[in-house]
Image (cartoon, rainbow, N blue to C red):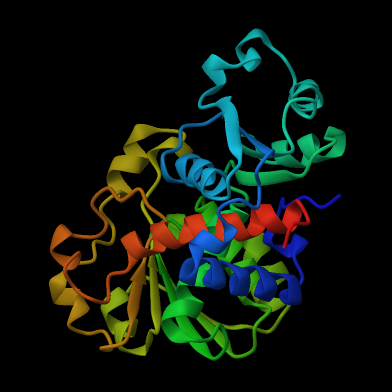
Length: 304
Protein backbone atom coordinates (compact mmCIF):
# COMPACT_ATOMS: atom_id res chain seq x y z
CA UNK A 1 0.00 0.00 0.00
CA UNK A 2 1.28 3.45 -0.91
CA UNK A 3 1.04 6.57 1.26
CA UNK A 4 2.11 10.16 0.56
CA UNK A 5 3.73 11.65 3.65
CA UNK A 6 6.62 13.54 2.03
CA UNK A 7 7.30 14.65 -1.55
CA UNK A 8 10.26 12.26 -1.40
CA UNK A 9 7.86 9.32 -1.16
CA UNK A 10 7.41 9.78 -4.91
CA UNK A 11 10.21 9.10 -7.36
CA UNK A 12 10.78 11.66 -10.12
CA UNK A 13 9.11 9.22 -12.50
CA UNK A 14 6.06 8.90 -10.22
CA UNK A 15 5.94 12.67 -9.80
CA UNK A 16 6.02 13.21 -13.54
CA UNK A 17 3.30 10.58 -14.04
CA UNK A 18 0.96 12.25 -11.52
CA UNK A 19 1.62 15.71 -12.98
CA UNK A 20 0.97 14.46 -16.52
CA UNK A 21 -2.23 12.74 -15.37
CA UNK A 22 -3.31 15.96 -13.65
CA UNK A 23 -2.77 17.88 -16.88
CA UNK A 24 -4.78 15.28 -18.80
CA UNK A 25 -7.64 15.54 -16.27
CA UNK A 26 -7.51 19.32 -16.65
CA UNK A 27 -8.06 18.99 -20.40
CA UNK A 28 -10.79 16.34 -20.19
CA UNK A 29 -12.38 16.17 -16.69
CA UNK A 30 -15.51 14.38 -17.90
CA UNK A 31 -13.45 11.33 -18.86
CA UNK A 32 -12.57 10.80 -15.17
CA UNK A 33 -15.90 11.78 -13.58
CA UNK A 34 -16.97 8.23 -12.61
CA UNK A 35 -13.64 6.55 -11.90
CA UNK A 36 -14.03 6.61 -8.09
CA UNK A 37 -17.68 5.60 -7.89
CA UNK A 38 -18.17 3.49 -4.77
CA UNK A 39 -15.01 4.90 -3.13
CA UNK A 40 -14.89 7.15 -0.06
CA UNK A 41 -12.31 9.75 1.04
CA UNK A 42 -12.00 10.61 4.73
CA UNK A 43 -10.73 14.13 5.49
CA UNK A 44 -9.18 14.21 8.97
CA UNK A 45 -8.37 17.86 9.59
CA UNK A 46 -7.12 18.56 13.12
CA UNK A 47 -6.15 22.08 12.03
CA UNK A 48 -8.14 24.78 10.16
CA UNK A 49 -8.04 24.71 6.37
CA UNK A 50 -10.04 26.13 3.49
CA UNK A 51 -8.31 25.35 0.19
CA UNK A 52 -6.66 22.05 1.07
CA UNK A 53 -9.70 20.43 2.67
CA UNK A 54 -12.20 21.68 0.10
CA UNK A 55 -9.92 20.88 -2.82
CA UNK A 56 -9.58 17.29 -1.57
CA UNK A 57 -13.35 17.07 -1.25
CA UNK A 58 -13.85 18.61 -4.69
CA UNK A 59 -11.28 16.21 -6.17
CA UNK A 60 -13.05 13.12 -4.82
CA UNK A 61 -16.50 14.37 -5.79
CA UNK A 62 -15.23 15.21 -9.29
CA UNK A 63 -14.05 11.60 -9.57
CA UNK A 64 -17.52 10.33 -8.65
CA UNK A 65 -16.58 9.31 -5.10
CA UNK A 66 -17.92 10.38 -1.70
CA UNK A 67 -16.44 12.26 1.25
CA UNK A 68 -16.70 12.02 5.03
CA UNK A 69 -14.65 13.53 7.83
CA UNK A 70 -14.16 16.39 10.28
CA UNK A 71 -12.74 19.88 9.92
CA UNK A 72 -11.29 20.53 13.40
CA UNK A 73 -9.87 18.59 16.33
CA UNK A 74 -12.67 19.95 18.54
CA UNK A 75 -15.27 18.12 16.44
CA UNK A 76 -13.44 14.79 16.64
CA UNK A 77 -12.67 12.31 19.40
CA UNK A 78 -9.23 13.91 19.65
CA UNK A 79 -10.99 16.32 22.01
CA UNK A 80 -11.57 13.31 24.28
CA UNK A 81 -7.93 12.27 24.06
CA UNK A 82 -8.11 9.62 21.34
CA UNK A 83 -4.77 8.93 19.67
CA UNK A 84 -4.07 9.31 15.95
CA UNK A 85 -3.27 5.58 15.82
CA UNK A 86 -6.68 4.62 17.20
CA UNK A 87 -8.51 7.12 15.00
CA UNK A 88 -6.95 5.82 11.80
CA UNK A 89 -7.67 2.19 12.78
CA UNK A 90 -11.36 3.09 12.97
CA UNK A 91 -11.41 5.29 9.86
CA UNK A 92 -9.81 2.44 7.88
CA UNK A 93 -13.13 0.60 8.32
CA UNK A 94 -15.15 3.52 6.96
CA UNK A 95 -13.19 4.85 3.97
CA UNK A 96 -10.89 3.77 1.14
CA UNK A 97 -8.34 6.60 1.45
CA UNK A 98 -7.76 9.51 3.83
CA UNK A 99 -6.21 12.97 3.85
CA UNK A 100 -4.88 14.18 7.22
CA UNK A 101 -3.80 17.61 8.42
CA UNK A 102 -2.32 17.83 11.89
CA UNK A 103 -0.45 20.53 13.86
CA UNK A 104 2.13 18.01 15.13
CA UNK A 105 4.98 17.07 12.83
CA UNK A 106 5.02 13.36 12.14
CA UNK A 107 1.35 12.69 12.94
CA UNK A 108 0.55 11.47 9.39
CA UNK A 109 3.59 9.19 9.59
CA UNK A 110 2.14 7.60 12.73
CA UNK A 111 -1.23 7.28 10.99
CA UNK A 112 0.38 5.51 8.02
CA UNK A 113 1.98 2.96 10.38
CA UNK A 114 -1.43 1.86 11.68
CA UNK A 115 -3.63 2.47 8.66
CA UNK A 116 -5.19 -0.12 6.37
CA UNK A 117 -5.90 2.53 3.71
CA UNK A 118 -3.62 5.01 1.89
CA UNK A 119 -2.81 8.11 3.98
CA UNK A 120 -2.13 11.49 2.39
CA UNK A 121 -0.33 14.11 4.46
CA UNK A 122 -2.30 17.33 3.99
CA UNK A 123 0.17 19.29 6.15
CA UNK A 124 1.90 18.44 9.44
CA UNK A 125 3.06 21.38 11.53
CA UNK A 126 5.95 23.25 9.91
CA UNK A 127 7.27 20.07 8.30
CA UNK A 128 5.71 18.95 5.01
CA UNK A 129 2.81 19.70 2.70
CA UNK A 130 3.31 17.34 -0.25
CA UNK A 131 0.01 17.95 -2.05
CA UNK A 132 0.66 21.69 -2.05
CA UNK A 133 4.00 20.80 -3.63
CA UNK A 134 2.18 18.80 -6.32
CA UNK A 135 -0.03 21.85 -6.88
CA UNK A 136 3.02 24.10 -7.17
CA UNK A 137 4.76 21.72 -9.57
CA UNK A 138 1.78 21.27 -11.89
CA UNK A 139 1.36 25.05 -11.98
CA UNK A 140 5.01 25.66 -12.87
CA UNK A 141 5.07 22.85 -15.42
CA UNK A 142 1.83 24.00 -17.08
CA UNK A 143 2.99 27.61 -17.35
CA UNK A 144 6.66 27.09 -18.20
CA UNK A 145 6.56 23.71 -19.89
CA UNK A 146 9.37 22.38 -17.69
CA UNK A 147 10.59 21.89 -14.13
CA UNK A 148 14.32 22.03 -14.87
CA UNK A 149 16.65 24.92 -15.70
CA UNK A 150 14.69 27.58 -13.80
CA UNK A 151 15.39 30.13 -11.08
CA UNK A 152 12.89 30.08 -8.21
CA UNK A 153 12.63 32.94 -5.74
CA UNK A 154 11.08 32.13 -2.35
CA UNK A 155 10.07 35.08 -0.22
CA UNK A 156 8.71 35.52 3.29
CA UNK A 157 8.59 32.92 6.06
CA UNK A 158 11.11 30.31 4.97
CA UNK A 159 11.70 28.97 8.50
CA UNK A 160 8.20 27.76 9.38
CA UNK A 161 6.77 27.53 5.85
CA UNK A 162 6.11 23.83 5.25
CA UNK A 163 5.13 24.59 1.64
CA UNK A 164 8.61 26.04 1.06
CA UNK A 165 10.34 23.05 2.66
CA UNK A 166 8.36 20.57 0.57
CA UNK A 167 8.87 22.46 -2.68
CA UNK A 168 12.63 22.73 -2.19
CA UNK A 169 12.84 19.00 -1.44
CA UNK A 170 10.96 18.20 -4.64
CA UNK A 171 12.66 20.64 -7.00
CA UNK A 172 16.26 19.82 -6.11
CA UNK A 173 15.75 16.55 -7.97
CA UNK A 174 15.44 18.37 -11.29
CA UNK A 175 18.62 19.57 -13.03
CA UNK A 176 19.80 23.19 -13.10
CA UNK A 177 17.28 24.54 -10.59
CA UNK A 178 18.48 27.62 -8.71
CA UNK A 179 16.98 29.25 -5.61
CA UNK A 180 16.94 32.84 -4.37
CA UNK A 181 15.82 32.67 -0.72
CA UNK A 182 14.48 36.04 0.46
CA UNK A 183 13.61 36.49 4.13
CA UNK A 184 14.44 38.36 7.33
CA UNK A 185 17.35 36.78 9.21
CA UNK A 186 14.95 35.39 11.82
CA UNK A 187 12.93 33.51 9.16
CA UNK A 188 15.69 31.95 7.03
CA UNK A 189 15.36 28.31 5.98
CA UNK A 190 16.13 25.76 8.74
CA UNK A 191 19.72 24.57 9.06
CA UNK A 192 18.82 20.98 8.18
CA UNK A 193 17.35 22.07 4.86
CA UNK A 194 20.41 24.15 4.03
CA UNK A 195 22.94 21.48 5.01
CA UNK A 196 21.20 18.21 4.22
CA UNK A 197 19.42 19.26 1.03
CA UNK A 198 20.83 22.36 -0.66
CA UNK A 199 24.49 21.95 0.32
CA UNK A 200 24.44 18.15 0.14
CA UNK A 201 22.99 18.22 -3.41
CA UNK A 202 25.30 21.12 -4.42
CA UNK A 203 22.35 23.27 -5.39
CA UNK A 204 22.97 26.84 -6.55
CA UNK A 205 21.25 29.17 -4.04
CA UNK A 206 21.50 32.65 -2.53
CA UNK A 207 20.13 33.83 0.82
CA UNK A 208 19.25 37.53 0.92
CA UNK A 209 16.87 40.12 2.34
CA UNK A 210 16.77 42.15 -0.90
CA UNK A 211 13.87 41.12 -3.13
CA UNK A 212 14.16 43.93 -5.71
CA UNK A 213 17.83 43.22 -6.38
CA UNK A 214 17.13 39.66 -7.57
CA UNK A 215 13.68 40.11 -9.16
CA UNK A 216 15.09 40.37 -12.74
CA UNK A 217 16.72 36.92 -12.36
CA UNK A 218 13.58 35.01 -11.38
CA UNK A 219 11.41 32.71 -13.47
CA UNK A 220 9.11 31.96 -10.51
CA UNK A 221 8.48 34.03 -7.38
CA UNK A 222 6.93 31.96 -4.59
CA UNK A 223 5.48 34.31 -1.97
CA UNK A 224 4.50 33.13 1.52
CA UNK A 225 2.80 34.74 4.47
CA UNK A 226 4.43 35.22 7.85
CA UNK A 227 2.43 32.70 9.89
CA UNK A 228 1.12 34.00 13.20
CA UNK A 229 0.26 30.45 14.36
CA UNK A 230 3.91 29.31 14.19
CA UNK A 231 5.24 32.05 16.54
CA UNK A 232 5.76 31.62 20.26
CA UNK A 233 5.10 35.30 21.01
CA UNK A 234 3.02 38.03 19.42
CA UNK A 235 5.79 40.63 19.54
CA UNK A 236 8.03 38.72 17.11
CA UNK A 237 5.12 38.18 14.75
CA UNK A 238 4.15 41.86 14.70
CA UNK A 239 7.76 42.89 14.14
CA UNK A 240 8.25 40.59 11.15
CA UNK A 241 4.82 40.25 9.52
CA UNK A 242 5.27 43.13 7.05
CA UNK A 243 8.88 42.34 6.15
CA UNK A 244 8.23 41.83 2.43
CA UNK A 245 5.20 43.06 0.53
CA UNK A 246 4.97 42.49 -3.22
CA UNK A 247 3.38 45.43 -5.01
CA UNK A 248 3.18 46.87 -8.53
CA UNK A 249 6.39 48.85 -8.11
CA UNK A 250 8.39 45.68 -7.33
CA UNK A 251 6.75 43.84 -10.24
CA UNK A 252 8.32 46.38 -12.61
CA UNK A 253 11.70 44.70 -11.97
CA UNK A 254 10.44 41.25 -13.04
CA UNK A 255 10.61 39.53 -16.40
CA UNK A 256 7.53 39.67 -18.62
CA UNK A 257 7.22 35.89 -18.31
CA UNK A 258 7.93 35.55 -14.57
CA UNK A 259 5.05 34.03 -12.58
CA UNK A 260 4.01 34.79 -9.00
CA UNK A 261 2.79 31.80 -6.96
CA UNK A 262 1.42 31.73 -3.41
CA UNK A 263 0.08 28.72 -1.45
CA UNK A 264 -2.61 30.97 0.10
CA UNK A 265 -4.14 32.24 2.29
CA UNK A 266 -2.78 35.68 1.59
CA UNK A 267 -2.77 38.31 4.31
CA UNK A 268 -0.99 41.43 3.06
CA UNK A 269 2.25 40.09 1.58
CA UNK A 270 0.90 40.56 -1.95
CA UNK A 271 -0.87 43.84 -2.62
CA UNK A 272 -4.28 43.41 -4.29
CA UNK A 273 -3.03 45.67 -7.09
CA UNK A 274 -0.87 42.75 -8.24
CA UNK A 275 -3.94 40.53 -8.76
CA UNK A 276 -4.67 42.00 -12.19
CA UNK A 277 -1.12 41.42 -13.43
CA UNK A 278 -1.20 38.44 -15.85
CA UNK A 279 1.92 37.12 -14.09
CA UNK A 280 -0.05 36.67 -10.85
CA UNK A 281 -1.22 33.05 -11.03
CA UNK A 282 -2.00 32.15 -7.40
CA UNK A 283 -5.75 31.76 -7.96
CA UNK A 284 -5.11 29.64 -11.06
CA UNK A 285 -2.66 27.67 -8.90
CA UNK A 286 -5.41 26.91 -6.36
CA UNK A 287 -7.65 25.63 -9.16
CA UNK A 288 -4.90 23.36 -10.48
CA UNK A 289 -4.64 21.85 -6.99
CA UNK A 290 -7.96 20.08 -7.52
CA UNK A 291 -6.78 18.37 -10.72
CA UNK A 292 -3.49 17.17 -9.26
CA UNK A 293 -5.25 15.85 -6.14
CA UNK A 294 -7.62 13.94 -8.44
CA UNK A 295 -4.56 12.41 -10.10
CA UNK A 296 -2.99 11.56 -6.73
CA UNK A 297 -6.17 9.89 -5.40
CA UNK A 298 -6.36 7.79 -8.57
CA UNK A 299 -2.71 6.85 -8.23
CA UNK A 300 -2.88 5.78 -4.59
CA UNK A 301 -6.07 3.80 -5.23
CA UNK A 302 -4.35 2.21 -8.25
CA UNK A 303 -7.02 3.48 -10.62
CA UNK A 304 -4.67 5.35 -12.99
